[in-house]
Amino acid sequence: MTTNLTTLVTALYVKIDDDWAGIARLPGRPPKLSHSELLCLAVMQALLGFHSEAHWLRHVRAHYRGMFPYIPQDAGYNKRLRAALPQVKRLIRVLAKDTDFWHDTVWICDSTPVPCGTSRPTVKRSEVAGWANYGYCASHSRFYWGLRLFLACTPSGMPILWALASPKIDEREVLAAMMEVDAQLVRDRPGLLLITDKGFASKAFERSLSEQGVTLLRPSTKREATRPGEPMLKKVRQLIESVNDTLKGQLDLEQHGGRTCEGVAVRVAQRVLALTAAIWHNFQTGQAVSRSLTAYDH
Image 1 (cartoon, rainbow, N blue to C red):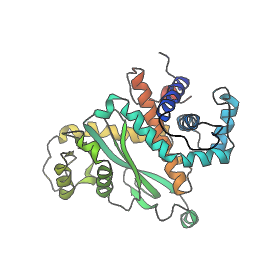
Image 2 (cartoon, rainbow, N blue to C red; image 1 turned 135 degrees about the vertical axis):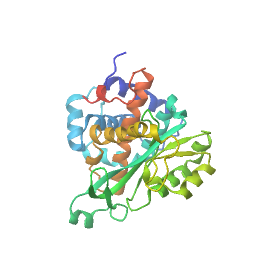
Image 3 (spheres, helix red, strand yellow; image 1 turned 60 degrees about the vertical axis):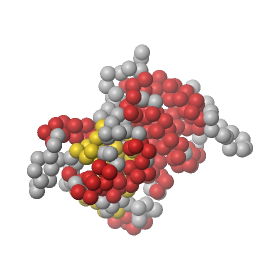
Image 4 (cartoon, rainbow, N blue to C red; image 1 turned 45 degrees about the vertical axis):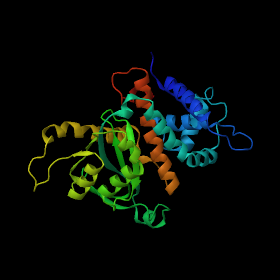
């Protein structure tokens, strides 16, 4: 089967339409741009690397008029997309559940910076101030102002849990909160193995996970003896680094362009959705590499 952006969008449109069919519509005149078309536009924008919504809509009018009979103006698209954040989150979960990866009992968790500003005046005026904060990126040896994206995914790269949080909040607190909110997911996976880095080292945190039936696999700290399973950890840990690299390198996570809390949240969710949709479609079409986006970025 030929796998390209058109086949992905067509399959995604049908999937969204089928899922949305069982949800009661709001009273009033239906929008000219349907819910399914809106989410497909959002996925295409992320996969094709358009940071500017105005630039993206001009491209759609020039090249995809046949797929989208009605194309909104810039402000309308921005407003609809921000309001659709709950639906974007829901669709990420719906697509993930429609693959065998959903039932995987190995999760890899890490966090990565999401910069939201580079100048002091921006920090003072930004609507994200109070949520965003200063943090340090050890892998690039640099400070930044913004948020951190916490992602728990399977070895295939399929996102299971994700959250945005201030870099000032302890990583263990954020992960513990994520697993508490979706506690049923953990209970449904007896013997769950959670792979993290040294930043999640804590006896109390590990004890809490053990009480939930979760085994934590992480590198040992300088004061610890070699932990069980550590020799094979480096190769597995590289998987989450490559997922973050996909989000940053191919889906331009750090160029999200959000200036408000809703804007940042939906643009990050848009990129997580694009990654999920690509993995979902690769699985449905039997592709050898589940996380390859090459067929969809042009």
